[in-house]
Image (cartoon, rainbow, N blue to C red; front, side, top):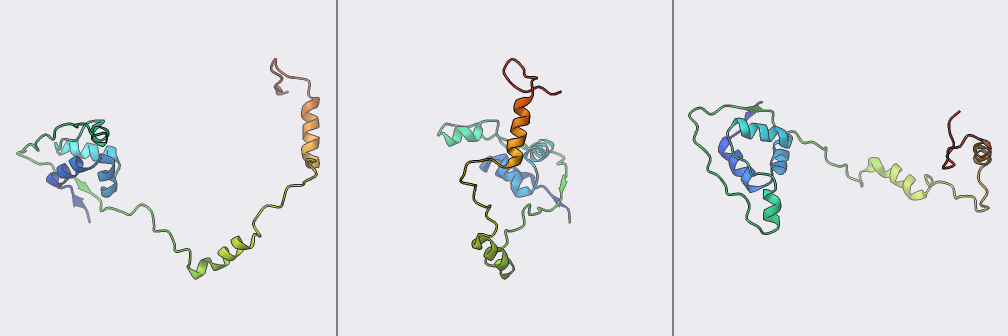
Length: 143
């Protein structure tokens, strides 16, 4: 069930693509992968390395992977797919929903063309205008 990190493979991957993308493949955060690299003594590219390469400049030189007398073993859980695949919209289960959406039954009613606001809005507006406590900018103050 538990898997271990392969030090050489991790070294190769973090120098081929950004740490965020490698971490996504392993199903962990970039911070967690960075800590794992530090524990395994795997050198990682510094900040701005991938931005420099994207703009045609020379990034940091890839340091060699040092030989260790004792390599720590770090366990990780198997990669779990984060998002379930999106359901197929042509699924017969979605037919009633698609029909309801296309019929327009869920569309809001048209706005009253007379331009007069709803009676509740008119009443609220008159109450707000009648308040006398306002600050120097004309903003209503609480009671």
